[in-house]
Image (tube, rainbow, N blue to C red; front, side, top):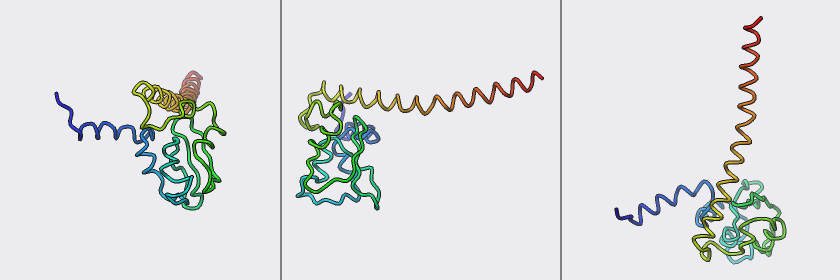
Length: 147
């Protein structure tokens, strides 16, 4: 079966929620305060792994799609790769030190694995308390019925 460009584009959209692709990170920046000519431009932020997590009021907040490090207080002359490395040296994306366009397939899959693992761990942390609460409620109901 032949895969068309449209099929590939549609499949790549599934990465949007994880901000895996640089183009999706670029698209996330709604109210970024710095111009395209600055060291801290949207393009450079996205290349360094950041997507926008700010608000209209706090518009200089961005988060790494891999390590989850959130940074704010950006200055026009800040260099995103340097700031990312300084504040999150353990980040797998920082350790590679390469923009998406220079990643090998193996490196991209490694990063994808890291992002998915982080996402699953976060979902499990949110799920555990719900299960515990549900179990507690059922136990209390059971105990009431036993009286």
